Length: 112
DNA sequence: CTAATGACTCGAT
DNA sequence: AATCGAGCCATTA
Image 1 (cartoon, rainbow, N blue to C red):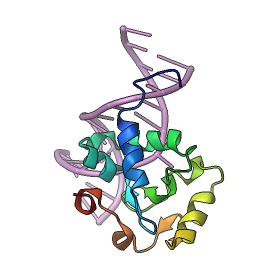
Image 2: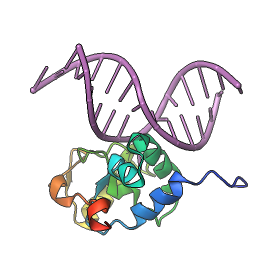
Image 3: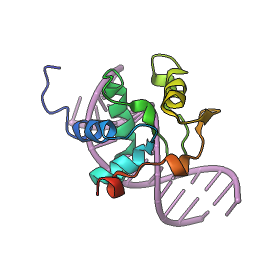
């Protein structure tokens, strides 16, 4: 980590992800859109890849727009993401978040 | 330096 | 309605 300007998007992404309330989930594109870059949804996932090493970043609360645990495979264990979500109170079936629309957390509205 | 990929999403055909 | 392609930013080869 001798570099300096690696952070930029990641820093913002981390901040938003850390602000995700328990029992809530959001999507990469939503975070990216909140940051002002809808197209960088991929980067958000990339940021998670670097962030998932940080326990302060609940990457397990971040899923794709349909509530599918696309990145569960990147966790320490492929089930860690689902297990954690269920532990938070979010039901996950077949890597899919139940009541996703209800569990969805919109930073643009919640954080304004 | 150029090219390709990546935990995504939207628009067009 | 379903499928395909393009866009976006950053990292790695």
